Length: 130
Image (cartoon, rainbow, N blue to C red; front, side):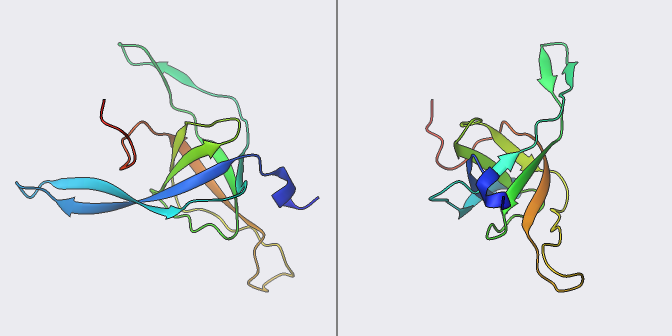
């Protein structure tokens, strides 16, 4: 089975862009990179790690996402799950994504992206004010 048959989620990719605010302080903003029309990702389900930060527990686990090779994913990007088992969750890419080889050795071809991520709770431009 090709890896595309394992994809069970649609992930929109957001890329951070830094601008300077009124007091020259950096303001992080995000631009959409990919909005999928079909499943383009799946997540490996390793065990999790919860820590108590005093005001409650926080998930600090790293999770590996497998993404279609057509995705343009980079370090610090945010993966927003818009369909699939983890719909509504957001993950920040933690480190440079890997391109496992899918062709003959040294052919330059690759099969899919692998990206380690951490849970992310920030705001994106499409979020409504509440």
